[in-house]
Every structure is written in structure tokens, then in C-alpha cells.
Image (cartoon, rainbow, N blue to C red):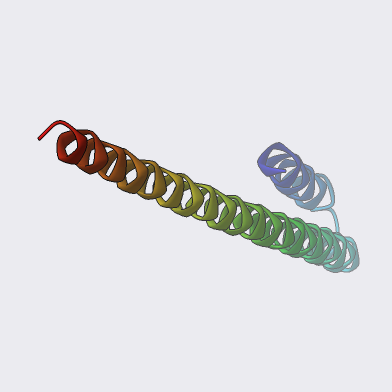
Length: 99
């Protein structure tokens, strides 16, 4: 994108230099350069909008992934707590039975 803008600017500058013969030609060259600059700006704006949309999608995907990971961690800790409670109960019953 940046390379295209530099190319357009260089072409506009060369066009102005080559058209230095008459005021009418200079005006026409300036109008062409202005048009090229406007088109470059529109292209940059469109690219910016596309990048913004993609960034939003990536952000949503990351948020969804983080939420899913948090849920899996929550489930895993619940399972570990349940297993620990069972182990404690088994240990209590083993100790109680030996006395």
C-alpha cells in the first residue's frame, strides 16, 4: 500500500514537471495529481476499514477462546476438588477402620 502511494506521488510530481509548458497544462496536471491523491486516500481508507474489521474478528476469536479455556480450567479444578474430597473420605474411613 505504501509503495503504491509513493508511486502515485512520484508520477504526480513527474506529471507536473513535464507539464510545465503552459498554465493550462499545469492546471490539468495538478488536477490529475489531486485525483490520484484522492484515490490513494480512498484506497488507504478502505484498507484501514478492512484491517479494523479483521482485528475485531481476531479479538472476538481470542475472547471466545479465552472464555472456553477458563471454562475448561473451572471444570478441571471442580474435578480435582471432587477427587480430593473422595480421597479425604477414603482416608478417613481407612483410619477409622483400623482403630
